[in-house]
Image 1 (tube, rainbow, N blue to C red):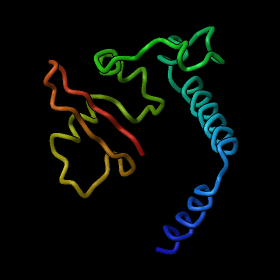
Image 2: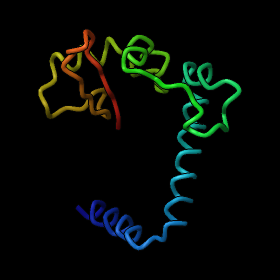
Image 3: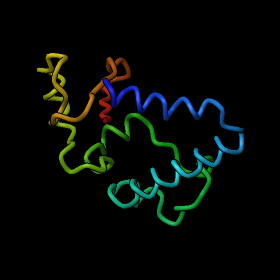
Image 4: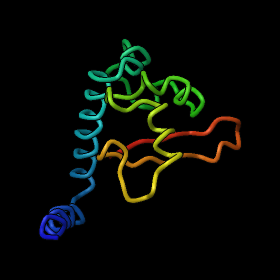
Length: 120
């Protein structure tokens, strides 16, 4: 509980950030996210080749169908694979996390293929 309250306190300070502080934080976090994706995801290295510093509006769109088709390449974690995430979803009790760390959610599949999304 103490850790949650400490994290809450740290995050609440952001409520008073100026627009410039918020934009600087967003730019830093986006840069950190992109560097991680390029370092750990073969898919993103290939998709964004030559565009590592391009604005998000200049990058190709990733559709749900392509995401699911290339899930294992998109994943930046070698222990997160589509077949394992789908198997977890089929048997999940609601209390345990996938691989002891990840949340998993899925779409209904009304467009033909269920979407599977994994995060920590």
